[in-house]
Amino acid sequence: MTGKSSQGSRWAVGLLAIAFLVGLTYVAYMASGAPNVGLATTRAASDPATDKPTRTPRPSRTPRPSPTPEVSPVPSPQPLGFKVGIVAGHWQNDVGAMCDDGLQEVSINLDVAARVVAILQYEGYDAELLPEYSEKLPGYEADAFVSIHADACNVPEASGFKVARVAASAIPEEEDRLVTCLIQEYGKATGLNFHRNSITYDMQDYHAFNEIHPQTPAAIIELGFMGADREILTDGAYKVAQGVARGIACFLEGE
Ligand SMILES: [Zn+2]
Image (cartoon, rainbow, N blue to C red; front, side, top):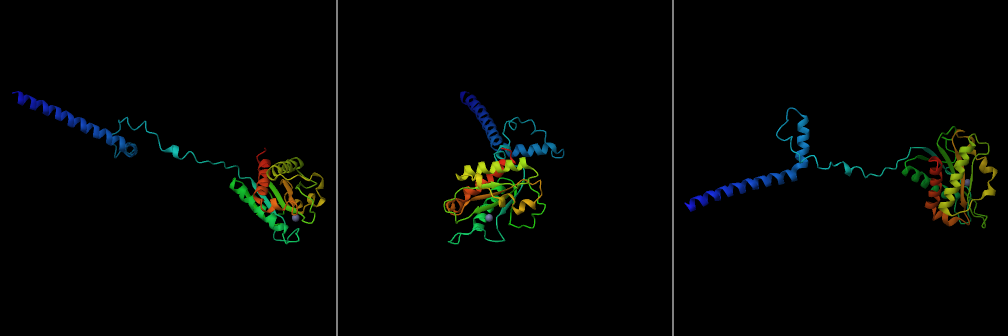
C-alpha cells in the first residue's frame, strides 16, 4: 500500500518535474532565439498567407532594443558644399621667386595649395586646385577664391605674411571679411606677423581678380618670406595650410 501510493506520488512529482523542465527549456529557447524569431514572426504577421496567430501574443519580443543604435554614432560634420577655388601661385606657368640654393616659390605654393584643397575637401567643401592662369578663371564663380603665393628669398631680414583683395571691389564688405578671416586664422595657425603696411599694388591688382566673376569673394595671400620664414613654409606646410583653410572656413561659416 504504502509502496504503491508512494510510487504514485513519485510519478506525479516526476511528471511535474518534466513539465517544469520543458517549460524552462521553452523559456530559455525563446530568450536566446527571440530576436530572430521575433523578426520572422513580425514579418510573417504582415503576410496573411503565413500568419500564425499562436505566435503573435508573445510579450517577450517588445522590450528588446532594436538594432538601430549601432547606426547612430557615425559622426557626420558635413558642411554645405561651398565651392572654393584655390590657386597654386605660378603653377604651370613659371617658378616665381627663387632662393640661391634653388628653392622655388612655386613648389611651396603648390605644396600648400594642394594641402588646403585636401583639408577643405575633407571638411566637406567643394574645393578645387587651379593653376596660375587656369582657363577656368574668366567669369569663375565660387563662394571663395584664394590665390597662394610666397615672398622673395633675397630679403633675409623680412618675415611675415600679407593678405589683400582687389582694390576696386564689387563686394568690398564680403571681401574685407574674407581678408580679415584669413589674417586672423593664418596668424593664429602659424604665429607669423601680418605685414599690414607692405601690401603692394601688384597684390591688389592681381590678374585673377580681374578675370573671375566680380561677385566671387577673392583674396591673395603671401604666405611668408622664403628666407626668414623658410622653416614654417617647408617643414611646417601643414600648419600653413591649416591656417589658410581655417581662414576660408571662418569666412564661409560666418565665424
Ligand atoms: Zn608669387
